[in-house]
Length: 245
Image 1 (tube, rainbow, N blue to C red):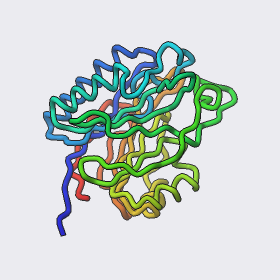
Image 2: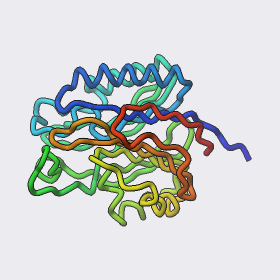
Image 3: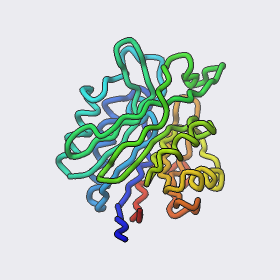
């Protein structure tokens, strides 16, 4: 049986809150670096474009016609790759925490975070209930000819989310995060085992308002074993791995 191998690039970088233009430039640089390393799939963390903000009316973007999606889609077409990135999405009078997926032919999929994080102190604008609308939960989509699904950060703590993802029978799971510190790798073992698919996990570095984030991107096998991991020291890193699916 043919088992494809995809070179994955997980990007662990410092996305400065509300510095959208600078973050886009950094993302372009990371994409070029990943492509030069032979990566076919390139994945950024949750909220990579503007991080958390109270200025959603100004900084949220529509998908796919917004500037970041158009920029990333152009890079994907130019370099024949697939790029996944997080942003605050605007849709009429609603706002979503969205992970967009683009490829050589444009938008592939967008996932809207569903189990929103509730943080009553709202430190660093992180009470998602105050500002965002929930999505509809994980869906199956095709990327590069393979079955995939996605959920974001706090979604992964909801048993209902994992049950729904497992029922989709994906070949790979995209799991972007935006946390000060990811749990230890073994905390994700049960998730990978239940879904029975490799899980690609990203997290940011740098300061998200008063929160200092330490990275820790990792890839888990379908049996929950760690097969690649970036540093947890808060350093920017491009994690490259040849993933057999």
